[in-house]
Amino acid sequence: MKELFKYLNLSKLCKASYFEKKEKLRLLQDEKLLQKFEGKIYSQNWEDWIIAEIFNRIWTESKYFVEFWIQDWTECCTRNLLENWWEWLWIEADKSSYDYAKNKFKDFKISLLNEFITKDNINDLFNQAWVPENLDLLVIDIDWNDYWIWNEITDFKPRVVCMEYNWSFWPNKSWVMPYDEMHSWDWSNYFWASLRSYVELWAKKWYSLVSCDSQWLNAFFVRSDIVKDCFSNIFNDNYKYHYSYPKYNPFFIWHPKPIFMKLIRFLNRLWI
Image: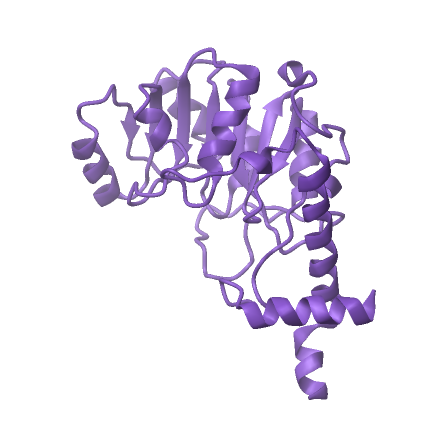
């Protein structure tokens, strides 16, 4: 039994329960909290309705989006926008996924590139596709070099950006995965960057964190000149407020099992 509890890492379990309590409190107290509007149409998690609510508050301008790495196109953050006649650019490195999308969406005003994204070619790809400088939405999901790709996007000022962050680092931790063009996701938690590192980078580029989704995957940023009073807690250290704790179980199996969540809550009552 001692070995089991050692393996479970009690301090992390109790921290997870602490952040769970904070999330529930935010939902009750914060009227502007975007997590209240979560919902799924095509997105992998609940990004669809968060994105819709963001634009309900700041309105749209270009109605143009860009999304990277769509794979089989069944769980895109932007497919709902496509079907509502936004203009768009999808960039997909895999040739079979690219060919499938080109055929499936041929009736739409299509802009689709079959390219491998690097920090050296990203601005050129945008220019090649005639992406407007002030596009409404950018979704970055490459699973490893996301931080560095965004750092290199200098010629374009998307009004809203959605990116996945590494939830395995607590909100006060700074960490960025080194740039590596040859890396691909190996099913470990070695990817992206911590939420704090993202917020610090985005502040330099004049963006504000406005929300994380409750599925502990996505962070949403809005250009600071249009944030105004539309969102809650947009200050530079707000990663502590918006952070959504990881919902995996102590053995790092992808989805949590109820018994482990009960154990976390039980240990929290003893520990904190």
